[in-house]
Image 1: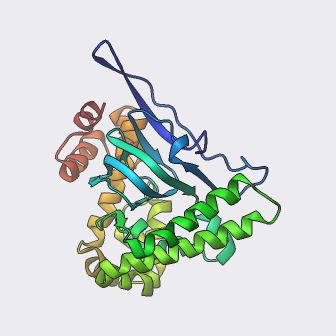
Image 2: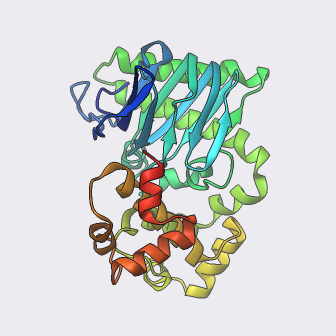
Length: 304
């Protein structure tokens, strides 16, 4: 696991009382293996964590051959079991405090790792298990598929740990195979929704723009202009794929970004409000409460 990989808030129990330690912001080590490869792995035997919340700023795949307990990814609670693949998108709130990982692999990578190779800036957005968080963020692998899928996780892990001059190309090809194979299995279960995303370039561009611009832009017109379609058509795409209006999609993504600020910074409510271009704190509070049924302060306090 990258030693600087996930933002985390540690909790330790001392004499029956839970003490919360200050959050430590950790970042992806791009040059850990002597050159910038934007990918890393960890076997569960090396995954030494105890009661922590994480907020990855990169994509995470996990194949758990043996696991128990549960993991919470944003608003989804996933019961862990044998032969389960987890998909952890960028910027999702992740709680693994009740998870027990016995046997398996985690792969962490930045979208740029694939974008560079395919010369397609939004390539990673074609995989909706990373970009439609209303769908399940896991996949149960059957006995016919598990050996093939697990082998690719092993190949990536072993190649990174025995890194050579030409390893980057081999690792990227393994990852590409893995993503495609998982997407085939995933779309078998979620065919109606996912096929629309894979064939609509405008929706891919919208999701890419939303991830890059949400802090500075939260109106539909900006995004429709950016990708070159009308507000009406963008709204239709969002309703078809997400069963939500474009306004709802943007608001929910903005609320998620604000949650990160509330949980992992010491900024005041007013500071966050102005950082995200709200006219004043009361307007910001009304927006957040409408989306979450809590005030920003209540969310911050209850999440400690």
